[in-house]
Length: 268
Image 1 (tube, one colour):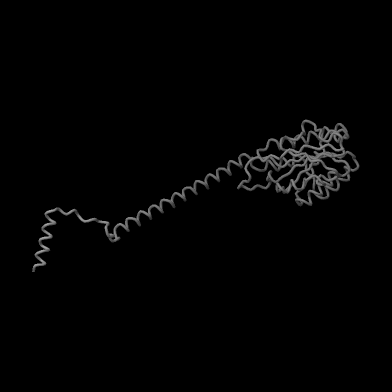
Image 2 (tube, helix red, strand yellow):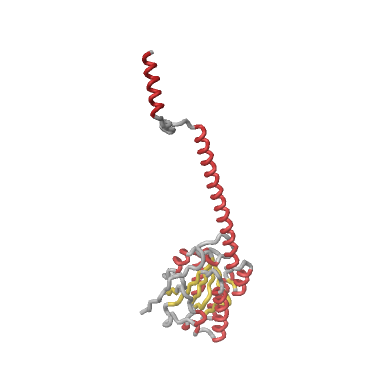
């Protein structure tokens, strides 16, 4: 009987989009950590396990320090008795899903493909522990999903069986799918800091909003000026309407005089 794994809801950090484009967008980059559970790590030689965890921790720590977080997914094997037992340095952070796989590929009946599609992932980095060509199967499935932008982090990857590891290494090297942690960090250092880039984007947005407000204010002034000019023009050229200017009040003497003149006019 397989224990059910709790899958926390992914956390959405930062604004939904940025108006400044970069060559490496962390929001569309996924890091998949494969089989970082004790049952797999215990099968490695002690020095190999230590080296793997050091490289993986360097990558993990670098991602944690970014202002914008990439998509991070943890994959565990259902064949392990302690599938959710992670070393403290590689434990899933808040909001990072843990998916259990029943086969070789991390994409097989795990929902990983849907998870990456919903987040519009364009590139994938893989690291972790592999047994029986699990890493190769996952890497090739990821390439089917996102294309050629899939890499296995070589110094953060270990095979339980050394012979299978050599064969997998040759295959992935021939497909140009290997990279190391320092190369990933080098790519990040070539770009402006995420926080600084967001400040620049905010400055651009504020400037655009300021210009839009000035344009709207100018249009409102033009409308008011045209309305005032039209009102003045109408006040000058319009003809008086009946009853608009009432007659002056007539005194009693003036009324009698007017009636007398009217009577004399009739007698004539």
